[in-house]
Each structure stands twice: as C-alpha cells, then as structure tokens.
Length: 190
Image 1: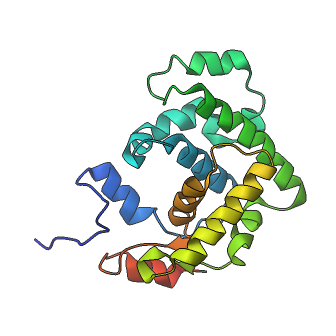
Image 2: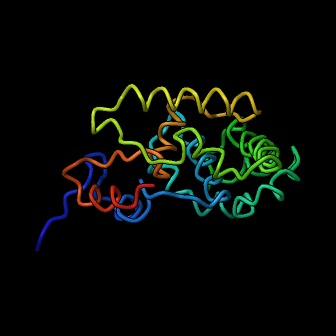
Image 3: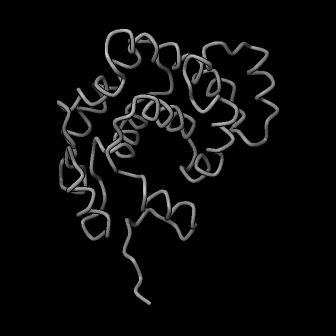
C-alpha cells in the first residue's frame, strides 16, 4: 500500500486528512463560504485547528450555516444560550465576533462581493507561500488584510488568523513541495 505524503502538520486523524486533502489551499471564490472560513479561523485563536474542525458542524448549526443576514439577527440571549453548547468553543468574545463579523461582511457586500474584497489583497491571484520562501510578501498581505478588516469592524482577524485564512482558501499556496497536493493546488491557483 502506497503511503501518501502530506504536509507535515497533518495528523493521522481522518477528519484532518480529509480537510487537508480536499479543502485546504484550494481557491475559494464563494463569498459566504469565505465568510464562514474566516469566522472559523477566528475561533481557532489560541487553539489547534483540529479542535475547530471537529466542531465545524456544530458552528454551522448554531450560526445558520453562516448566512450573515440571519446571524446579524442574533441577540445577547442567543449568545448566552450558545455559551452552554458544549459543541462550540464557549468563549463569549469569539462567539460575539461571528455576529460582529456578519455585520461587517454585509457592509462590504454593499460595495462589492466579499470574494472580490479578500482576493483584491493579492490582485486576484494565488501567491506562493512560505514554503516557497515568500515569507515577506505573505506577512505583508496578512498585515494589510488584518488592518483593513479591523478598520471595517471585524474582530478576531489578527495577522496570524488572516494568514491561516489565506492559506485555507487558496489565496496563499503553502502546501509543502513534497505534499501530494502541492502540484494540484498550484494548477488550481488563480
């Protein structure tokens, strides 16, 4: 049986492998899916990604499949109820961030699609990541994205979260060159 070579951060967990193999690093253009992924990345702050990944379905259920127009209707009572949900990361600021981010997302959508907005940071192109020695450009883009998102009212969007988001949605290709996904994702690049 041939062993597949993946990025070294991927554990033996089948859910993690599926995420890496089928989602991570592939360009995402759907605005609502980009919003969902940004919100989930914010939930990761201080935790491992697998923790969030294992709770993703619970987040989708709790936050109306990440439909921003429904999320903005949530009240403090709704958040209080979510604080008792063991299927979520029960961190009030993180849960409130999803509501705040939905409001900010809708304001961006009034101007342009959220997809056009986030992809504009790299002029609509996938950029090579740190694995290709491109640390400075990647860090600069993450910093610029973080600053602009915060200016627009988003929270839990620091530079590290923005960089992880860019990796996850294919704005940055950071698959290891030895990873079986590297070439495929390179060919999918915008």
